[in-house]
Amino acid sequence: MIPALIVFVLTYILMLSFQKYRPWIALGSAVIMMILGAMGFFEMTPLSALKAVDYNVLLMISATMCTVMLFIESRMPARLAEMMMEKVPNVMWAVTALSLFAGVVSAFVDNVATLLMVAPVGLAISRKLKISPVPVLIAISVSSNLQGAATLVGDTTSILLGGFANMNFMDFFWMDGKPSIFFSTELGALASLLVLMYLFRNYTEKVEAKVETEVDDLVPSWLMIGTVLLLICMSFVPAPKEEGALKTLHGLRSGLSCVLFALIGLVRQSIKERSGAPFVRAAKSLDTDTLLLLFGLFMVIEGIRSAGVIDAVAGVFHKAAGNNALLLYVLIVTVSVILSAFIDNIPYVATMLPVVRGIAALMGVDPRVFYFGLLTGATLGGNLTPIGASANITAIGILRKNGETVTSKDFLRIGVPFTLTAVIVGAAFIWAFWGIRT
Image (tube, rainbow, N blue to C red; front, side):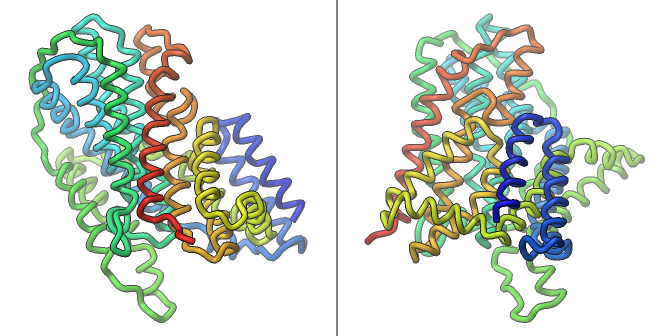
């Protein structure tokens, strides 16, 4: 167990120190885990490592990225934002509306992509009214991170949870007769909007906006809707009882659904442009770093699982909380918020999901309340600091390119109350419906 633990800890230290090379560090660590397995330190072969990779998750992420690219190119998001701006009376309502819009979109689209859609509107309004765009873009950024946990396709961490816990698209809304994580996320979003309204209460300048963006292609929008609808339909397909090709296809059904609509969109766009350029743009739009990082991490986590590290960590959590499920739940949420403020939530969630399952097994309870607590804390914790989420880093980069100076104080003034409010409200809702009664 000790060699696997050392490799895992060094992997995290190196990924924190050399973020640009995170995918290669993860892949290198996966190879080392395979070598340790071959040397007899624990049971792990290259074949078992490759089987541990969740290919359904990787297919969903990559295909959704391609569909999102077409959606952004259609300029529909920009037009929707302009239509919203036309209805608001002043800057306070404009920022609140843009933040709400970013949150809703991010429930179905990658957070960074959402920010890139909405940020130009926030910049344009700020320039027109001669106000600082810094708080405006920070508000949009933290909102785009907020609702990623609301649906199966909203964020990489949600896709990870769906694959690990065998949750389908509808399970994020309603499961076992109870409201699921979608409703806790939305309740947290509403509470955080009140925070934004208070923070921007003095921004009373009037907003005069026009709907200027023209959308001449509605197909990408229908592809986005079609992807969601097909995911819902696939949720009701029963799993084959026997092992074989059909069961393998069933396990990949969500990813293949996303691939289908991405291919329809790309082939259509290629015919329309009479070239293969859309496929080239799609390849460039893929977040290969995240895909390679996850590919490597799945194997690294299989290594520490085989070595018994995950069971040992689960035992530590269980010892700290005893049999007090509420204490354990609060501990998971709190630790997730704090750690996600400084480290990437994707490897953190990928690592913690099996740990949480192990803790629940030791306590003899349903793990889902702990899964939801983990996802809530990890998704929102990134909003505590400027470096806690990719969307925050991107927003700060956009502001600096536009000649703006962004201090930690600027970010914390919005990020801290926004995050704490959303986490407390969302986590309380989850416990109210899913909490373990003793």
